[in-house]
Length: 192
Image (tube, rainbow, N blue to C red):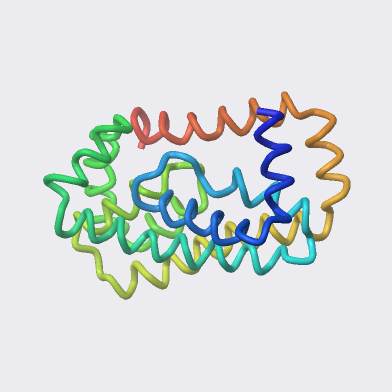
């Protein structure tokens, strides 16, 4: 993990770093298992001047990727959508999401988009539930924007102490991140 962190820190200075992070953000919203935070956090720590540009790219790409997830749920749920959901073992979670959409609608997107719950499940479930596309888009902009801009703002403001904390306690931070990532999948599978 430390080598990956060091690699991403070095990558942050590369001219293709932001487009690559945008690609990860796009893919995570519809099928990819790794959240963009894996790149967002080290990239902002390595180049705090671009914190809000990085957050904006992450947000826009996540919302556009969310549209792909929505389309998968809306038009291709029985094929691609079912495969994505099954690949991550989220079948039971998707059924509960569908029930929640019927009852809570937009609040599901707004709340779950901020949590470690896999956003791809929210996007695919929104499409499968035929949730209003306009509402889905603006709710995604709000929830993903808040998430990524909040992280960027905190790192921009308190970057050096946070970077020092991460680098001095890298193993602890790595485990915490991994637990949050796996925990999000487990929450969907067994709780939500």
